[in-house]
Image 1 (cartoon, rainbow, N blue to C red):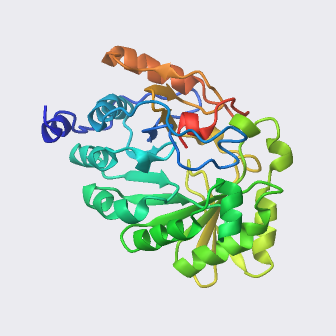
Image 2: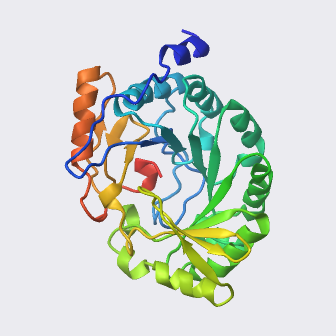
Length: 328
């Protein structure tokens, strides 16, 4: 079957049957990991483990698409965020985006470390990509090397500069006490100078830093206090199911904070994850993936209900798996 006919055979036809839990939560967003490989070794993701040069073999774009589309149809998912590992390492990434676009999805997003953006952003945009989030935890080479454990700040910055002319771009900055809390204002100023929204992420108790996450946490109020030393801002009303709180400066520039510890958002979480192995997760607090490879429609519906039942009612409680394994 050609890529065109494959996409046409799995066109999104409607909302699908609503699968909801007792709290009224359902799945509206799929976070789809296409690989667990990464060319960085960020301290909060890879921890003290060595860089993984290779890991799982890549599944083809067609195979990933064929696994994801029945979930999208059954759950009525409207938005996809492609993640990893580092998704731009997947050789079929552009083809995958094109398949989703041809199937009728018009909200296709990507989270990336930005290393390959300058070469890929134009073909990704033309294939149907809607927006980009770039993980950037420092505003200079020294801090970048400390967080990513490799050099390359200038290349990532160039990629962001190229991308912002083609697509909406956000910078995601994960803060780790003792590592980069001094980067709050420099990253803010960098994002503002580029006209790119910066979102700060409170550290999550996952993977290698699970046991130390509380002592390494930089809370939302610390972030706001740091920016308030130089700028005035007001909060923007938060949309339902949004992970971020946004704040607007007097000149209109906005920044955000994803405060999963200070202000938990589990009670209206609408996200479903699928890792690079084809396992789905309704909650990143639960490391028990449900493998959906080869399941029929009724079995997929049951898998989705099971995944939904594993969501935490109030707050994230930690995970032995890292975002590299689950999909960021």
